Image (tube, rainbow over all chains, first blue to last red):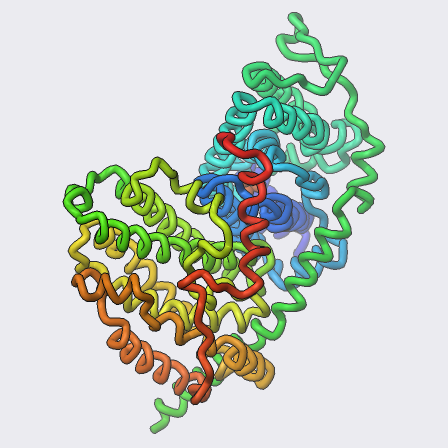
Amino acid sequence: METIVEKSLEEQFEEKIANEIRIEPKDWMPDQYRKTLIRQISQHAHSEIVGMLPEGNWITRAPSLKRKAILLSKVQDEAGHGLYLYSAAETLGASRDQMIADLHSGKAKYSSIFNYPTLSWADIGAIGWLVDGAAIMNQVPLCRTSYGPYARAMVRVCKEESFHQRQGFEIMMTLCNGAPAQKKMAQEAFNRWWWPTLMMFGPKDEESPNTEQSMRWKIKRFTNDELRQRFVDMMVPQAEFLGLTVPDPDLKWNETKNGYDFGEVNWEEFWNVVKGNGPCNKDRIQTRVKAHEEGAWVREAALAHAQKRAQREAQKQEK
Amino acid sequence: MELAHTTNTAAQSYSPELRELLFQYTLQLADTSLILGHRLSEWCGHGPILEQDLAMANIALDLLGETRSLYQYAAELEGQGRTEDDLAFLREAVEYRNPLLVEQPNGDFADTILRQFLFDGFHYLLLKQLQNCPDKRLAAIATKSFKEASYHLKWSSEWVIRLGDGTEESKHRIEKALDHLWRYSGELFQMTPVEQELHKAGFIPDYAQLKQQWDEHVAKVFAEATLEVPKNVFMQLGGKTGLHTEHLGYLLAELQYLQRAYPGLEW
Ligand SMILES: [Fe+2]
Ligand SMILES: [Fe+2]
Ligand SMILES: [Fe+2]
């Protein structure tokens, strides 16, 4: 009996996917679909939260009041993205406490890009321009992802991400049109962030075990390599416009494929950072754990106070 | 920001003395919101709860917005061609005019909340009055910031209550904060010569009156929070006349780093 019912539910699910009908929290869905989504959405949420740290590192040192305001509101946006995404994951039955515990224990991953340090003000420009640029490339297709709450969260997120990229580009532009010291700062930041940004699209297609199933379920819309290629094609002209040199001796326009050929990503570094050996992996997690542990008494107090309040309300009602 | 572009015809007709007083006062207000906003922004990414991380960034942004409008106006009043950034990034600690309270380090969340609460009550009451300031620019800035300050005061008052009437630990922590920070609250209401002159000229309210209303609000919130209002505490003064605690120098070293390291560049 059970298997027959399940099968028909699964058929309904597959039909919706085929017809581009969104899957909603109350709909039946295969276990693996749910698990894949929880993993991906919580990873994405964690990336937003951990991603606040490298840029937050420059809020107190931003070089003008205007830049300070823009950066602070950008980093605040990222916190907001984290919130929407945690909420989207909660619709699948994940709890925020558990997700955060998994981040802190190292069980859950977040985008490796945030395991690199921000060493100069130009890194803030490079992150906005490149990292938010790559995020947009990854995320715009997610606005059409098959799971409703995720897709809707991504629509809100993407609107803000394009502002983030613009402010990053503007910082780079100001530096590149500025004094030699500023231009040098910009080129150095570009050198540091270019390759890690290309890594943001994930491993090569043939080494990405989840891609095929995710594409079939329309969680993912493009493969890692497709997105990486698009990103390179989009960014190289922008770098040229800024007068920056792409740190890749193999970069070359390829007329036949109507795109750039580019050098091989350092996959050894990629896997190393994924495994926790990047320059900032330890610091980032320690910082998050510290904030969480030092905030425990605040969360307890808020809870205790809310309970006292509710009790007093109830007593009033009785009288 | 549109405030910056309204021409202030009144300012042009001020006597040089009045103009100087208004410049000093506007600068003092700007310094105050800059330093407190800066302190709050240090929390960004490190808050105890994601929602409160957002709330603190929000308040920091409001204060920073107010700061910019005020510095822009101060620069115009001064008329020496300085910009908002010159005023924020190229002045020494002894030239800063913020009260000592706002430069105190963040400490734990209880310290931050209490510092905010003590300031918000003052800020709210002051801006409420400044909305009627005969100087149109100050009045416009106050009107915009008053709405924000009302929200800030609500937020910090609620947290004082939560922490005071929460757990034993939270009560202990907020009491410790009170023990440390209360002595900086008096300066908010202590009128400097500049403030006295401007009060006489009818530009700003009598702070003694603000203090009365502030006392009432504090008493009400503390009662709900089951906290005692401290008595007979010696009040530390000095920030508003340039005599700061040692904390300000480090804050400015960080804030001003790029402008100092690369003088005269655009960012
Ligand atoms: Fe993102
Ligand atoms: Fe984001
Ligand atoms: Fe972003």
